[in-house]
Amino acid sequence: MKKILIVDDKEDIRELLRKKLEQNKYLVIATSSGQEALIASKINKPDLILLDIVMPGMDGYQTCAELKKDKATQDIPVLFLTAKDLEPEGMTQRYKDLGAYGYLPKPSTFNELLEKIKEIIG
Image 1 (cartoon, one colour):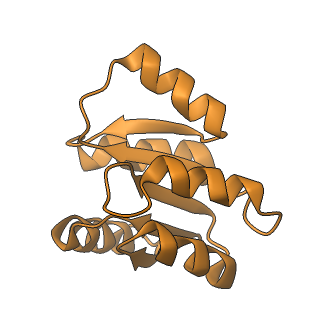
Image 2 (cartoon, one colour):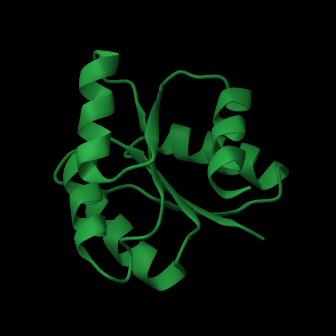
């Protein structure tokens, strides 16, 4: 069973994603901050990290940069999920610079997310 780490400061989003992903046979770990994500990713070794950008403290960009610096987590694919209103070109360059797989805007449909997850990890 593939493991997905959800990192989002909003509990309702974490729980909605957890429920939907578990229904689709993924094992889900959820954290509410970048700091927690760094620890959880080392302990749980997820197959994919769904990472919010706008969070208090360590934001998603900083979290991704730290994950990519660490040999234990650098190869875990990161998919940003964000409600931040970004221009697609700027966002694309930013996630590429950080070594992330890509991003999906919130709200996207769950089917769009599921399709992207299957594309990344099966």
